[in-house]
Length: 485
Image (tube, rainbow, N blue to C red; front, side):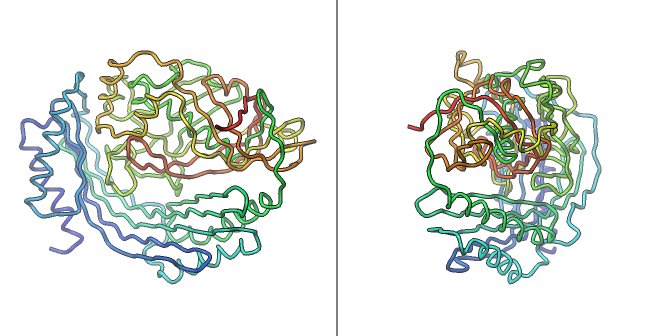
């Protein structure tokens, strides 16, 4: 048996084990073969680099209506037997009140070959290192105390099957960088870029580095300005707006609603009539997937139309409860170590008609990027960052044990890269200020820009690390700013 056949054989062994067990109502099993590269480059040159292969199997097993998720890189039969036993017991121990329902009739047979014209693992390590090292040199003239780039890629081949007869094979070439430019006596510029277009990603990197260096230079040369507080007219760049819309999209995930954490119901007004948000299927996006963890093909979901919430994001179990066909939103965690989660793939926010000049004229503050938001509700902070079983409906049991929380959906967004505006132009950078968000904040959007940009990154949801991407225009709104601390 070849090395590439071993994970498939392990998958088939697990699938047979679950099909023969009366305690298992339903299971999904996947075989994964990955070729990975991890590279760290600083101002002093390459710090570490590693290329390696990894094979493993994952499974999500429903027993007594609840689910447990497991991943192992050990393919020996004794280990697989232990994984199966633990997964079955894990579902039983949850004692989930409402059992999950499953589609017992639809059978999927498909192959998705990915969006890469050229595989990322066919690119020599020397070229990857040289591309990153040369790109980092774009910031040589900026007054920085630290420069660092984390580069990672993986060529992933996956075969997945379910106990209801579905089988898919997919290929994915996912690559990304995280660039950190720490300004001396100033803030830090952070940029993430990612793609599933394979080797083509490397051709995009010179522009990414050049743009990051230019942003860092402007920020480094700007003097610190007094930041206004209280109700303020704020302009969000496409990057900052994308971060905000990514945050809001979490409240449109069905399990967040089941947990009682979402302040938005279907039919609620989220923002102005000019606001439309779609969770799209963009080929080659950092967050793209050919089939999700439940072997469902991704299809677009219109989340907000004309300012009104029209849909939520579902997986198979929550979709069955709501009588809605799932659209492929059970997204795998990067690396497969943690359970898949209900999540957006690539949010598209429809642009408006306001020019950049119109957005900025008369505004007080320009936000180029936020740091991670701080949730005001302690229960929400704990639940979103803590571990959660692989069954979305378990969230409903948590909601039954809690009371209404008036601070749900409220957060402070620290301004990481921002400027004071006077006459529509930058007049110094602002520091130590946060934008206050509540469920009515987007009602105060007064203009949406005609030019959009894409922001990418990694969300952590219940310990799972999920890729996200948002293409959004800049927006102008009235918001409350407050001094940090």
